[in-house]
Structures are given as structure tokens and as C-alpha cells.
Image 1 (cartoon, rainbow, N blue to C red):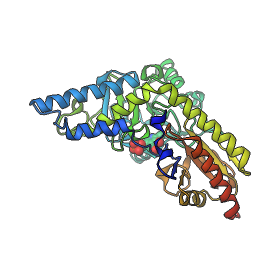
Image 2 (image 1 turned 90 degrees about the vertical axis):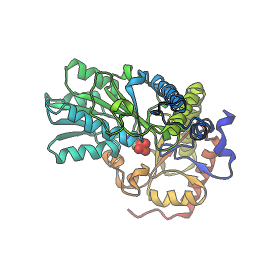
Image 3 (image 1 turned 135 degrees about the vertical axis):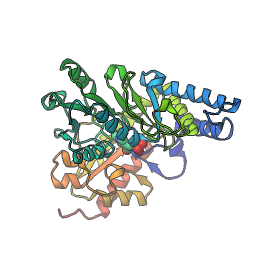
Image 4 (image 1 turned 90 degrees about the horizontal axis):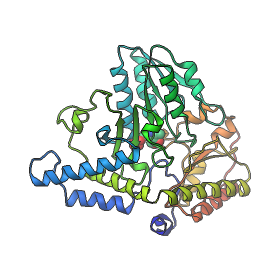
Length: 390
Ligand code: PLP
């Protein structure tokens, strides 16, 4: 794993916010450079340079498809997880528009799912937002109870980005089948992809979103799995790329990098998995042992996400304090930019716990020294910051 220990070696910074984004791996960066400066042709061009770019695109799509357990033609590249989520939701309800106007999702989805749902509510759809229990779990039974004749879409994430909880997507798929529901099943697997083992077939989903920058590829690349036979309306029309589903010249460099990052992860899957688990276990133990007043939050099982709360302290203040010392964690989803997180709000935590929530998230580039630095930083924060009076 030494070739993955880059961040720890690069000076004094300790990046522990890998659920927000990850460092691009060297293999991914090299693949992007080669695609930008070597095989830079347009895959749609008829000449040899275009042909080589098209061949590379085909191979890269194959890598992502294989990692998902999908067929290459079921994988469409997008610009990010948000685009994949938006497209899946808007497209699924359009496809099913004659079958009803009810959607089931969860109250702890990413805004990339919640916002299009809210938009659809304004257009006359009814959306059921399933609430988690205190640990952040949602059950398939809740979906069973909410399911109606006119339900056209169920959207449930695989791994929650703030809590690390793993949701029962596979069970929901079985339920929809048993109930012979017309609802399409979408899964936001942005935080689950590679981190927890799954195939689209075993999950039984119709649509599934992933994003490159959470797995050591650059920002600006994602994909949507669309099960064959599902005629999702196009995301972008114009140039006929991606089987007419998402026009626009393919982002060949990002795609090459995405494939390289995924290939590297898969070749080190066991090592990365055990490294993440060790980091999380070590951090949880050391934080609980050495930082009085710190508690873990939720029952998240994902190996890379550890939510904790420093009871009585304001998380934004603690995040800033740590940041000034080169230690980077999040006060919740980076997308919320200081607003209280709807995910932790859905847990109904007491205010003192809620205010102090910090999300620590790991990658294989992290070392135990990063955790030690975090623990020291939090001890200093406790000594030097005033507890809030709330
Ligand atoms: N879904 C989840 C669960 C996420 O964690 C994120 C990013 O944080 C997204 C969707 C959005 O992905 P992207 O940043 O690629 O748009």
C-alpha cells in the first residue's frame, strides 16, 4: 500500500474528508494526461485518431461496466453523480408518466435526489420521504408500507454520505418484484461504489448513479447505469453520443482516468477494504478513549465514513480550528456549506449533539498518523475552544 500513502508523506496536512472528494490517483492522472495529449481524437471522428479514441472509450466503458456487473451498453457517462441522480429521477417519472404520480424516497438522500423530487412535487407529484431511526437506518418494511398502486419511482441510496449507513436496496428490489410494482428502482450509489461490494444484478436496481471523484478519479465524471430495456428519455440531445442518451463530445480524459482509478481500486480491493476498516476502527477507538465528550453518531457500516459529535461544541468552529492546523474534516455534507444538515436533522438528535457533528472520512491514502493528528487536534480544540452554551 506504500504507493497509496501519498498524502501522509506530503507535508503536514491530514485530509480526512474523503466522502467530499478524494485525491486523484497517479494512475488516473496519468491516464487523463495520455488521453489529453496522446489519444486526444474525437471518438465520433471517422479517421484513425477518432477510431483509436473510440476504441479507448469502449475499453473504459467496459471497465466501469465490469465493476458494476453491468453490460457496457448499460453504462452512460455523465458529468457527475448529481447529473446521474437528476436524470434518473426526472427520466423515470417521465417514462412512467401514465402509471401514476407517487414517488418514494428517503429523508436522508443527497440533495441531488431530494431537489428533483421537490421540483416534481411542485409539478403535482406526491413524494413520501421515509424517515430513518436514531441510527440512520431505513427498512424495506417502510417502503412496503408506503408503496401504492400509483408509485412510479423508488429512489434509495446505497450508502448515506454523512452517516455511512447501508440501506436495504436489494430487499426493496425484491419487494417491488413480489408486489408486481410498476415503480422503477433508482439507487444513488455514489458513496457505495467500490466501498461496499455489489453488482447491479444482485441489487436488482433499474437505475444506479456513481461518481468518479469519490474513488480517486477527477471531478467532472460520473455514470448512470440504465438496465437494458428501460427507455429512459435522453439527458442531453444534439450530437447523438452515448447511444443518443447524452449528447456532447465524451469527456475522454476524465473517462480514461475514471477507468484507471477503478481498475487500480479493484486490483487492490482487499488491501483497500482492510485499510479503510482498520483506519475507521482505530479512529473510533482512539477518539472515544482520548477525547472526553466525543460520541459516535448513527450505526453506519460503510468502511470509510465515521460520524462523531463533540457534544456541546459547534462543529463549524471545530472544523475551522482543525483546518488552521492542517487537519481537514467536514461538519456534515460539503454540499450544505454551513446549513444544518437535513440528514442529522432527520435523526432527531438532541441539539447539543446535533450542533457538534463532524464527519471523518477515510481513503487508502490515509495513515494512522492522520488519525493521531486528528485526535491531538480535537484534544486541543477542547482545551482552547469554549463550549457553546446551547
Ligand atoms: N450522492 C451522494 C450520496 C453524494 O455523496 C454526492 C456527493 O457528495 C453526490 C450524490 C453528488 O455527486 P457529485 O459530487 O459527483 O455530483
